[in-house]
Image 1: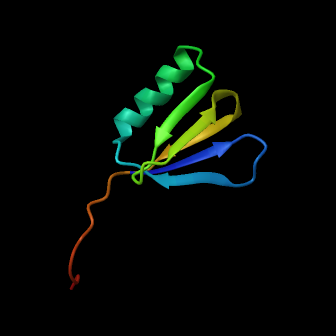
Image 2: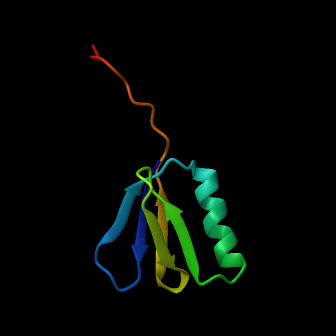
Length: 74
């Protein structure tokens, strides 16, 4: 799943691939915001931990799951 995170006052976005599905990511972010947590923690598919301050969060874009095709398309 591709995740793009926009942060306030930064021109570039944070982009990475994650093993989590869209619902898990949405639930993680919603729980952090609703509980008043100061940080959102997400892990990419290589095991890197991303810690994002909730107050700096602009947006989170969760890509659709795409099945990768093997072979040639005629």
